[in-house]
Length: 210
Image 1 (cartoon, rainbow, N blue to C red):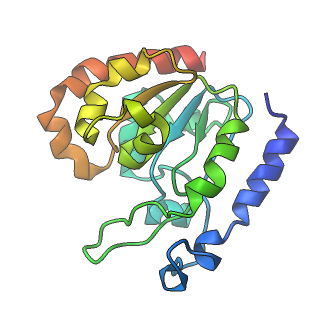
Image 2: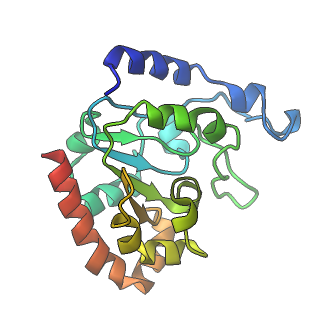
């Protein structure tokens, strides 16, 4: 287990990171257009890691991960209240991109910044060897964390959740769709998610928080 002083140093280094603004992967014209604000929760005690995509604007403004309607839905999926969710002894929260990436021309959030995961992700994950379950939210996190277990698309990856969860990997991995309101139609079209996957997720969560 990594000691808390080492993690506090790592938190400070992440908080001061500006690579997406100062050294953009695709060249200066692709620099992050606003001041970066990394939003990450790393922990020496949490047994569950939430691996998401990137903060939205509201999270960028508040500095609190999943501080929006998506977070409300995710907490409902987990069966936990806000106090438990934001207790870093219970949950670590490490998105693929630590900062809000901005909007595209249609007003949708851009993908996670390319600079972030190659620079930070393995270092942060390695600093939390106590993690027992990784909740892999959305296609970008699934591509990074699941490798050969990832299917042709997000739906099929989540549909194969039993294979992923019971593969014997350590930590265990459970793929989830993004809890965004934009996925409400997906949830209606895929009732097996609520009927079959969520009960298992809630049981696993309860065990790992006990």
